[in-house]
Length: 296
Ligand code: ARG
Picture 1 (cartoon, rainbow, N blue to C red):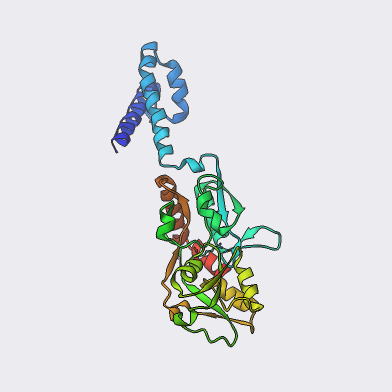
Picture 2: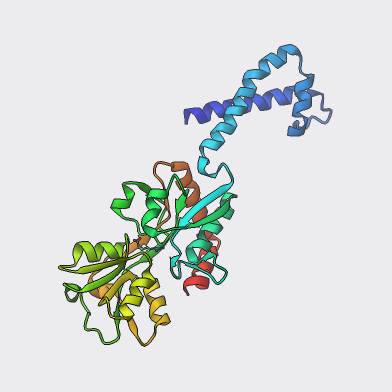
């Protein structure tokens, strides 16, 4: 704040100087920026000497403006990590490009921030540790958890989620207690994995890099069920309709989760910029349009 006041003071001084130098303006209009170099050239040596600290002040002003803008954005490119194995939030489209709700959302955010978005498709498990090195941030239907918060910051949440249980048609699994001792398929390093591995009594957990691989093993009987987020579960249910069912996690007592964008720890400027863009996208209807387009 103190810095801001001195910047303001410097700015006032610059304006004062420019106005003084532009005094010859017959109309008495405020001198425009464009006349500033001219005014400086015309300035007496004495005034030029005085101008120096003012210039420093002006430099300081732009440095302060940068301080409110994350360094991550300085190169004009936002490198975004995702795991495009999670429809409808992220998947690889027919042209081999990552697409989905999250991809469209982060592109809209990039547009607001005036940067180009480049998407890196990688393993979900690798995303958190890649932030700050290989990628600037991650958007991957990622649930905010305390464990993750120890190494990354999160944007404001943008979507509510819940784990679902996919079972073969005719399965008797219907409650949390029914999961005990079962063969459970999950995507490695996901909240579904944490539930199966940490909370379910005696479960034999198979961890896959892709959710769809877990579903394939459900179809061929290698696992009894798959614990995965609601929307992907419903996509898979539709994809393999008649063979599997997606059961509501509420009947298993699972807790509501929040998706948010994972950000480098401590980059408050980036968090603030991303949150502001997200707010604008929600306010101007873009967000609802993306929900309609991708999630329905
Ligand atoms: N919401 C779950 C989690 O954060 C699963 C996310 C998986 N996302 C993905 N793109 N594969 O752990």
